[in-house]
Amino acid sequence: MDGLKQFLNATTQQALKVRVGGYLDKETDEAQLIERLKARYGIEQVYRFDIGKNCDGFSPLIRELLNYVDMGELAVSKLDEYPDNHYRMLKKKLSELYGVHPDWFLLGTGLDAIIDLVARAFLADGDHYLLPVPNFNLYEEYASRLGAIAVQVQLKEEDQYRWTADTTTALIAQLAAGPRLLWISNPVNPTVS
Image (cartoon, rainbow, N blue to C red; front, side, top):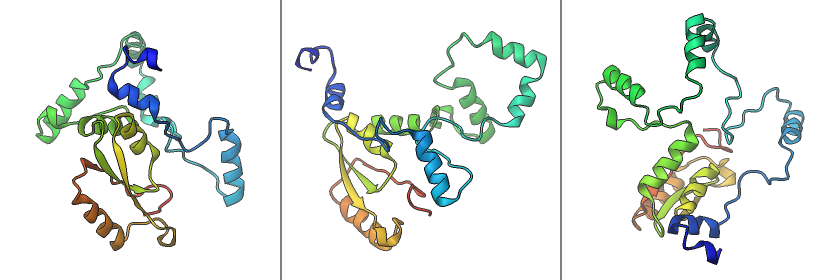
């Protein structure tokens, strides 16, 4: 690592120092785990919200649209081009539709990208942020890559990890210390509300 320091910025160096764990160990057989959960709880479908995959597949409207010869040819002709990662056309259409300036839209390729953008916009090395826990691991992962420090407010098992008046009171008390960001997600696994 020492030899690499000259090539890596401070944020990357910090990220290499901190190891943030995900939901599952790399050795976990996820397919087996899902099958065990289905059998244990008698459920038909398991939805994974921690992976970048639409478990339900794409809309039948997309299939219908792709069946049009012209649309299929247009799609195939554009497959070798990178998408506009600034979403200019979409922002323009949304702006026209809702009467909001295009710069006011923050778009990404999914929740992970938006969480990353928010973390990078507000957090820097040494900043504190509030995080009710348990929570989605990417809030902490993206913030720690920037060197930010979590101030955790523990949700209680006896409350089924739901927000209560005590949760709100604890968060308000922590706000006095001036954190740069408060992550709020509701519902969040393992809560139901």
